[in-house]
Length: 347
Image 1 (tube, rainbow, N blue to C red):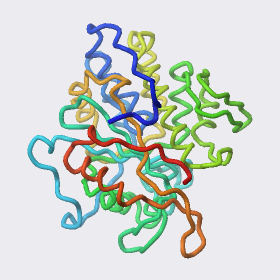
Image 2: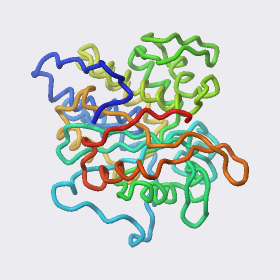
Image 3: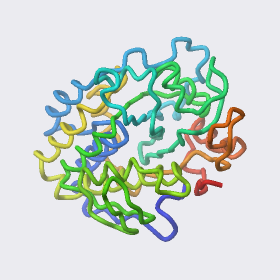
Image 4: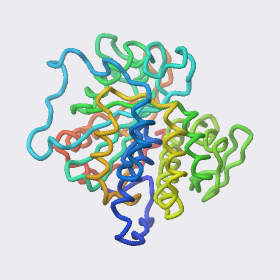
């Protein structure tokens, strides 16, 4: 798969040394986790931080649909080891007495699916635009982000499983405020912005620039400055994730236990995970993914036909159901590496 986010001609930098490979893999998952709504992968010398901090995060009770017969069949054989993790972003922390787990009545601002193949050599992250128009089980046609409001996390899972035709194995929700904390814990990150824009009193130029937590929060939140709105916002959020991964995998971070501890602690208060997403599970996954680097993480957006108007007059994003078949096949057979995504725009 070509990483359409990186753009033509951009290639990942080679690994510095093989000696730090195991630690790099462990730290990679904490970076991906904190930003993509997972936290983990730190084992060994950092295990005490992971268990005491990560296991203290809020848990989502009953995160999955209760009627198993309505869910896609689990993959079998070697492909059965693949993992699909639903990542939901919220910008409404405190609306439910400070609870992220109880999000019924609130709409998700960001939706991503992280697919970890059975061979653990790559990570594929698909963004789903929140205004994507589809059928929500038991509710009829609506924007996909309404599923969380209508039926909480279980209905969001059921809706997205219907889109993928594949099971969601784990769920995590993060409040956008956590993005600020992780950025500051890293001492800022270098974001490569595709377009210049202003947001939250900050000016972002085209190209690479160093940002602190407040700037990062404005960067990932903004959509009104762009002609293609949420399309560019999704790309900006992916750019932020890549920037955090790059900084986290640097020697400066890998050799600093205090910084790693601060990284975990910064995001934990803004994170909620399903009850099966424990420190033990994440640590084990981190060891299996010890060879993963920034260049092994591919970002793309669910295929669309651009924007439109719903029968009741809402501004929506039309899903490209024909193109989506190739994505579904990738999820259903653990072959996303063969899918060639297209750049998604307003139309």
